[in-house]
Image 1 (tube, rainbow, N blue to C red):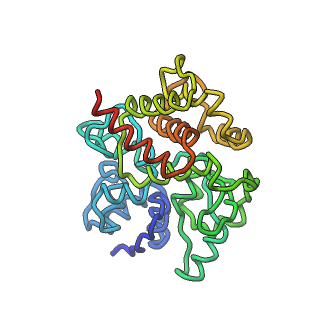
Image 2: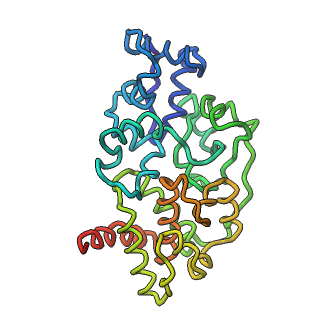
Image 3: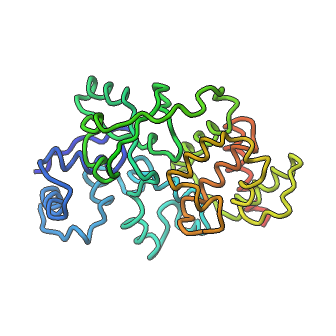
Length: 306
């Protein structure tokens, strides 16, 4: 029998997989993955034939879509996309491809943790777990504790398969970016609020409609968008760039998250479309609620008008 820890709210799927392996004395190699599958199903099934996220959903006793929505970064990746058919998980061959290859990906190149959360977890649960909100692109602080996040200085894969508590000696506190600004008057915080909303998997928005809604909003503010034909062109506008601390944008770039957003290279656009849109809408509205409403509701209106 497989020893199964109950998934915690917002526990990152790849971190949960690491916990399942650790609790059963298994490593992260393929052979031990097959062993975990055999222990759970009672059958000798080819590990490569079963997407890991499906196995995790079964272990957690959740349906696949709910598990993906609450425990992976995938809803953020799918939030703004060219093809909205099939909803968050898509359909047909595209669905199978996403489930097997995309659902467990984490956008940041390294793992992040809050040391206060780790200590709190150890006292309350007896063990610590990886939180997906700490892996949001550009996130540098814990919303619960207000503490600066720590970056683990080893490969993402190695970190997530270990307990956050084990990673504390290798975790370096990130520089204190933008803490001097008021959260209610900062586009960066609005960006995080938008990303958190989209991470909930409640919407899958068509890219063309998102662009139209953003462009209309910018024009209403008197911004010249004549040369803008894509969302990332809006992001390059001086009026939008001025809303962000350059240090933070540089930090995003160092993570590899904006190299496509600020260039004409469109590879990896599944995530970058969402990030570009979130950055633009956060800059064009004064509050998070207005920005989210403008992005979601205005997009629907644009879709109806077409």
